[in-house]
Length: 522
Image 1: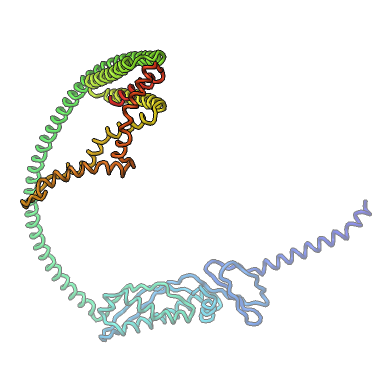
Image 2 (image 1 turned 45 degrees about the horizontal axis):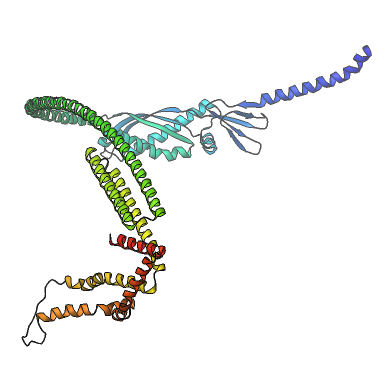
C-alpha cells in the first residue's frame, strides 16, 4: 500500500504544480483587466506611443508596458457670465446663462483630442480644466455676438441670440473634442437703467395698446350685441316662420295620411269586391266548363255513333256495290245506286257541318277545331269517293275502248273535242272581256269600217278556231269530219247488230260506256 502511495506522489505533485500555474495565470490576467465605468473612456498608450480608446466594456492592461488615462464622457453644466459687454449702440449689458457641454464620443479622434488638450492626470482635474477653458471660449463668443447686436435685439429675441452663440462656438469646441448640447440665456441686465427705461416705454406702449384694445373690445362688444340682437330677432322670425311651415306641413301630412288611409280602405274594398267577383266568375266559368265538357263528351258520343253509322252505311254500300258488280245490274240501277250514295254522302256532309256549327255555337267557339276536322274528313271522304268513282269510270271506259273498233274510238274522241270547243273558244276570247272601252271611228265610206269591223273581228276569231286546234294538237278538224262522218251510221249499225245477236260483251261494253258517260256528265 505504501508502495502504491509512493508511486502516486510524483504524479500528484506534477498535477498540483500545473493547477497552481494556471491559477497564477488567471489571477494575473484578472489583475490586469481594466473595466471601463459607464460615462468614462480609457485611453491606453503602448510602448510605441500607440493609442487605444476603450469607451465601454473593458480590456487587459499590463501596468509596466501600458499607460492608462481616464476621461469623463458625461455632460457638464457650465455657468457663463459676461459683464459690461458692449452692443452696437455703445450700451454695455450684463448677460448670464447656462450651457451643457461634454466630450464628443462619436469618434475616437474626438476623445483623443479632448484628452490631449484637457488631460490633467486626474479625472476631476480634467473636468475642472474643461470647465475653465469652455467658459473662456463661450464668454468670448458672447461678447463677439453682443457687439453685432443692439440691446433690443438681444433682449427681445433671446432664441436667435442663443443660436448665434452656438453656431459661433461649435467649430471651436469641435476642435477641442467638445460638444455644446444646449445654451440658455437666463438674465440680461445693465448698470445704466437702459433696459428699465426701455421697459417703461414698452409698458407705456403696452398700456396704450391695452387701452386701445379695450376700446376696440368694447366697440366690438357693442357691435356683437347689436348683431346678436339682430340675429336673435331674425332667428325668432325664422323660428316662427319655420313653426308655421312645420304646422302647415304637419297639417298636410295629416291630410295626406288621411287620404292614403281612405285610398287604402277603398283599395281593400275594391280587392274584396274583385276577389268576390273573380270567385263568382270562376264558379260560373267552372260550371260552363263542366257543361261544355259534358256537351263535348255527348258530341263525341254522337260523332262516334255517326261514324259507326257512316261506317255501317259505307260497308252496306260496298256490299251493295259488290252485289251489283256480281249480278251486273242494269245501268239504271247502277245510276240509282250512285245517286243514292252521292245523296248519302251529301246528306252526311250537311249533317256533319250542321252538327259542327251547332257545337261551335254552344261551346262558344271552343269546338271550331273539331268542326273543321270533321268537315275536312267529310271532304276527304267525298274526294275519295269521287276519285274512286272516276277511277272506276275511267277503268270501265278503257275496257269499253278496248272492245270498240277504231271508228267508235274516233267517234268518242271527236265527241270529246267537240265538247272542249266552247272552253277553247272562251279562253281565246277572254282577252276581249278585259277591254274597258272601244272607240269606233267610222269614215262613212261603207268599206267594212267602224262598228262592222268589230263584229268581223269576232267572226274571224271564231273561224280561226280549227286552225288553232290543228296548230296546238295536230288534228285537222275539217279533214277529220270529212273522213269519218260517213262511218258513223255503220258504227251504230254494228253496235245494234251486236246487241240484237245477244252478245253479252257488247251489252257490257255499252252499259259501261253509258255509265262512264253518265258519271262524267255528273
